[in-house]
Length: 231
Image (cartoon, rainbow, N blue to C red; front, side, top):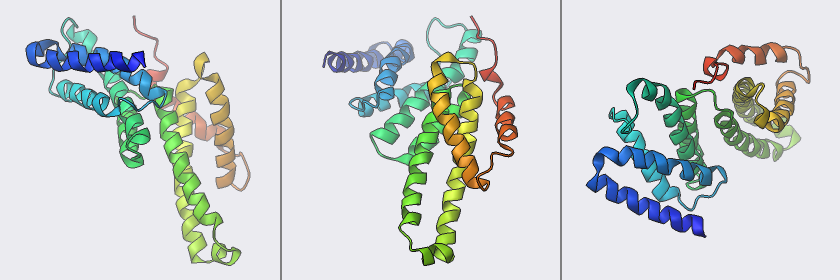
């Protein structure tokens, strides 16, 4: 596909720049990170290896206190966590979908959320990985006999499920908090809200008592999500 050919050319250019114009390397890497992220969000992992290496290089440069040429210090201070969050988010998707390494994916996505807690997509992706874990644990529990479910084996299996459900509830709470009032996420919010209610009932004897208060606490957790956008 033309997009892939263009990406191959872009990787080549970045490699040349890193040798010939090292001061511009971060500029080129960050320019490249946008199309890499677009591919990743479509779960297209064709560029996972080269793309992931480029993103890691950008992170290394930023952590070594490099900043893109032509960006003022105060502007970079504002942009830096958002850029790092985006880089980690893409690495998380590649770890999840290309490397099939859920633990690494969660680490990357949680680092992304640490850098910028206001992106609903990051929380949603964390929730998707936790949901996959829940589904696997549920299969193990469902395969037990009724007698096993009532015994120690069943109790241990159920406890593992409960731990993951609590993690999912926290993640969904964060996603709902940071996406509130954001039109592009309405459809996703509807689905996540329904799942949140179901998981809450699972943990609270089919009652929704306490759920509004539980969700409300996440609204103050990420001030960046409610801050006015900067120009």
